[in-house]
Length: 140
Length: 279
Length: 109
Image 1 (cartoon, chains in turn red, brown, purple):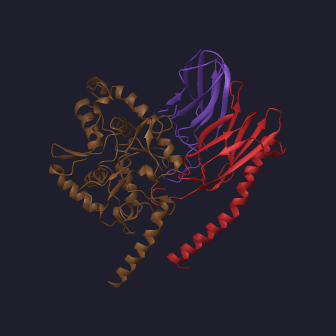
Image 2 (cartoon, chains in turn red, purple, green):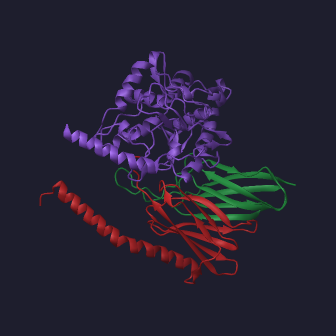
């Protein structure tokens, strides 16, 4: 078949649509699997744990986030739309009073940043924030 | 003719409403206690704009915050590296910058006037540094957009931070200024876009998800979040022209030197913000 | 050793005993994720800082495991209490085996 530009565009966008529809659930469950590795399947409820992230990230390469987990010994961060969902794990020592941490992360697309905190008593908390990651015009 | 008028009218109507919604914000850029001028009357030679704004005013609050503190500013780690480079011996003459220059503070005010004509040649910071390295230090020239080069230019630019941009457009600079100005208003590429189409006629609007600024260069070399490193003025020109789907000019080309002079002169009056943080 | 890796830390010079202080750290590192491809289409192998540990007078303040999703030039901000005068040690561990360190003293009244 003669590959006209029109046909190539149609093929391309069809493939992209299929990719988009197909891949998203798979990636989201990758995050769930990694989270389960941390919690051992135990429930992670809402608590004092918070995730602060911009609503819109001006560039997905450098997105500032902050987690605050009073009373936690460990916080694991996941990004459910990234090729690999693990982002970082923070273990807090005895000289850490506030159990907060701020860092800058890479987000491949609009997705949730999920924090799972393990508390001193062994229970888990969960918090998340959605970050819209935009594709720029000329600059992006 | 009818077609052009209709298009023109449509463009005006399309422009009017978005500019109200997405104009530059009113935030104040205060870096370590020093307030920067991010808004001022356009310089006399600039007919196309009444007011000029720093690119900082078009960024999200998170990006803006990164520039307001010298530790938060990711560019500063490269300025630190340049401080080491300043002391490092390099070249056949066995000298470092420090052998002859007491410290980077010596260069306060320089960046605000660059690029400028020196000995008949339009000279950028990159030219100045390399000329010095080769002729005085007997060292290898740095590549235009290398980490070392841009870090050193950022270190020197930092010494002018807070001072108003003041690039000469007359006298020896005039022919280069005119060439640069012509380029600025020339449409390039398959998309047939000139710098002015976006940065003069459409600043404040969104181009896809990017908030268009006036394309000022008072903060260069700038730390771009996209590349997570310091970016030179010519590197940005290349990126912009490439995005119009054109064969772009090279970094260090005479065309880009002239364009740099013209674009820098459009920011005369704004504070030098080097090293700025942008998306 | 990765090229041009330079740490930068901000610790207050002094504090009162038991005070909570904020510490900021930065280190220049490309954090090659392992997802990027070179011009020939080959995957550029992963090469990141994978761990960051901060101790004060030998006691742990924070211990971070980093994945490729941490941005280039990793930045961390966190708090610490300082019971007495002493020294913070900052250690970054690179995939390639290099270890980068920095230390800062603090006077505690």
